[in-house]
Length: 370
Image 1 (cartoon, rainbow, N blue to C red):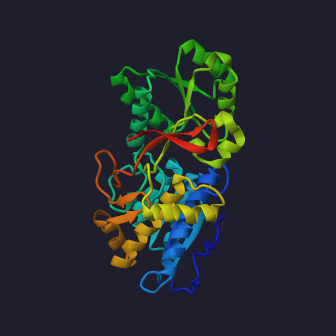
Image 2 (cartoon, one colour):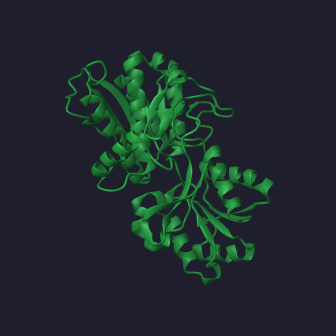
Image 3 (tube, rainbow, N blue to C red):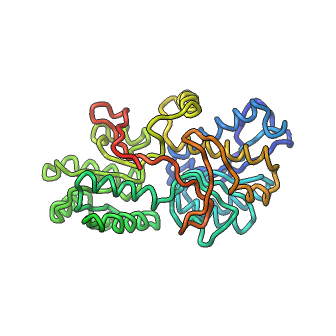
């Protein structure tokens, strides 16, 4: 089901607006909290653009479509948005969904600026129509592998589910850990209960368990099982995909969800723009913004800059990706060709490995930077 256009500032959309299609997961089985954060960042940026005069006097408007983590739904949304005349499509959090949207945008000749999805192969072939802000999975997860090796972990288990994204993550970890003497053992959560998984961790003599599974389940049940198993008292639990970033994680697990390192795409210290946006996002969200909200904000300010400079012609927008130079909340954004990646890529946003402080689960500790 389509959702209506979202109000984007004081200007009324009377048909003269410049429209951007926004793809976000807002219902289950999508990661709803991630979608809400992404949309909050986009809405904030659109409001600021309109308060500053819009795009050459025309208001900027978001036309929001809920992907619900469904690739077919996302592809259909791109079709619809193209018919509605949007200048570009933006957003999405789930990698497999973003791949479907990117493929359709490439086929239709619609610029797509992907905000948060990280799967390296966002498109099957090189394209000029798609650019991406989030770091590729191979980059971020290699940083995570370096963290594991630096912390002394060589025998690593991964709890997995069937997914292109999870399989890609396991492969990246295996390939990057091996030169440092690390090994990866895969444990299939479809075949193992959380308690049986704990038995396997003991048998395999693993020192770290990585959650390459969905949230909240089975991730929450696995964390509880491991935390309650005295044999695994020294086990490091990790979540490179970022499940502990969101407030729902802390609500469901409390202190048991702390000390679980994950990837976050923020600098150690935000600059002036980032600090201001963080304050505004905190007020909008009634809580701390995640890095996904910053990705949403940066997506819109990049597109607004392109629209001001080059107009709304779709081919011209896509042709500007190589010339983008925009100061975002997390550093200057430029797009480049990266070997093995078929889209224009910001190489690279800042990458951190962080966890929630056991003494204060609302506080994040930076453990490693890439």
